[in-house]
Length: 419
Image 1: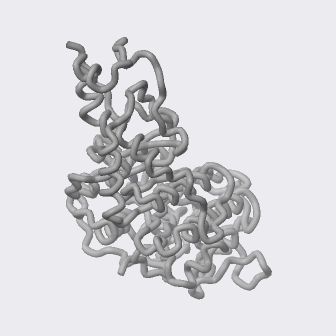
Image 2: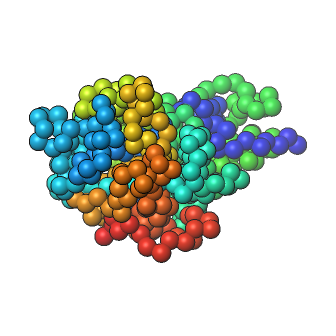
Image 3: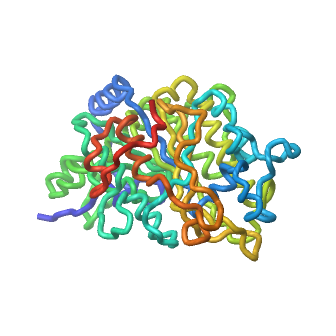
């Protein structure tokens, strides 16, 4: 008898599902799964990874720190009120980069919170290692096999969980969702489909449908994670989220990031049982020509802020059950370098939007920017361990148990961003 070691992840390639000629799933399977998902509108967490290390000192400007302008040179963001391009004041000390003007109404409505000087206790300046640690939730430990979000979801009993419980918009499953949770990766909802073909793994003839394949011994493909993936395809086609257009006048920015957010909103509004959605926002490694109120970083921040604002507007009242968490592996150096950019740093800033966020406040202890206050004499020091923030969001918003999230880490208190 033939055997097949195929896994669900094996079929997610380039966002399309490489299932071939498996026929049609029983309709009751699709109807039941869809009904169950719609009956239980759970909390949703949308995680956005700003890969490349965003400059938190430009994204969330500490304009009230007297050492900020002396250190930043040509890349400093102007003080609030210093013309139309100055930082958007939040509380008299911090301000948003002017390109993030789309997020200012959320702050004013107390639905946007921020945490500054947040990051990892590990001091690596390697993008690869820092991202891996942030997604595994085990700084300094490379042997961890699963991600912290996967651990959190796996620890929650969900015998009737939707096949779309956890979805990543991208060509591959991110580290943070790898584990025993059955996450799905896709680049486009329209490409998540069944592809017709004449043969399957090992030259098996697939023309006779499920029973034939089972009789030929491909048990794992159809009755394990493979069968779940097939049901996911049918469920998505039945829900037809692509028919759902942005609501409330929401306009997503063009490009991969905006499209990912638009499709996340479609999945949420289609009630397919989504609990965690993940998307990347890249382009933050600004070693040269970073710019200030205008330039390379400003362009990326505008796309970022406008995308998050569009998601909030699109979802409307649904945002009471949806929380957005942004993260980045580390920040940038306090001083600009010789190329009018910044190098790999340490602490940075992160946002929390919607859900039960106690917005209108910047959380975390501010360490200061005087030279003697900097990490290794060059970087914003970390005063909030990212695990404290992530644990608060996962436990208080999603309801996951705290214990499996971050092995070996015990937090004495959360930052307090959730009510």
